[in-house]
Image 1 (spheres, rainbow, N blue to C red):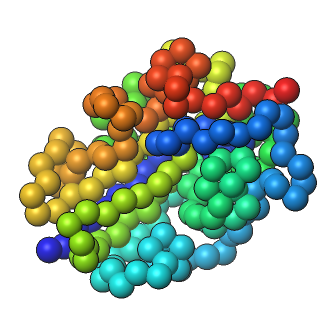
Image 2: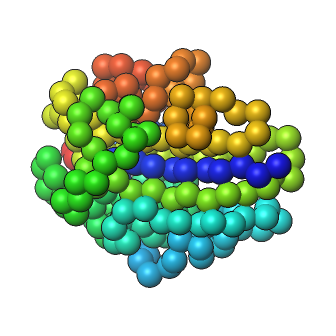
Length: 218
């Protein structure tokens, strides 16, 4: 059976953020040898086949990147700062800004892309801009699949509770799935034990704070 995955975000990845299982991270800026490293230039196909599902035999087709190419790439050396050593980075600004320290308040960069997205628009409280994402079809080999992700945002903490609500969605559609998004897709990126989607207004220093890691420089 063929399934489709669409990973979409309206966010900027900075130093720290949200993960489904909160890592224990040290305070302050990381040493130079432990800061996250990013790499541009890999195609969406290379990222999905060689990074996202590396080492598996999934039949994957129809790989598409969404958004500015400078916002999609590869990262490594992330264990210290985000709890994941390597993977794909999706950013609403240049991924080169992901390395700490974050010395710019409110915004480190964007692409001024005003294209909307019907699925993210259902999650956000205002207009969508700088959408970024990956989409692909796959045939699973098992009865379940798992994914790990970290959500982070330049909007912490000054825009928490405002209309500037950075959001993240992980949409899956296919046989047996009935959700409220495009093609009956279901958003599987939810706060554990709830139906709350991942955003700065749903995960922060006041709400669901057990999943939040303060990204303010000390």
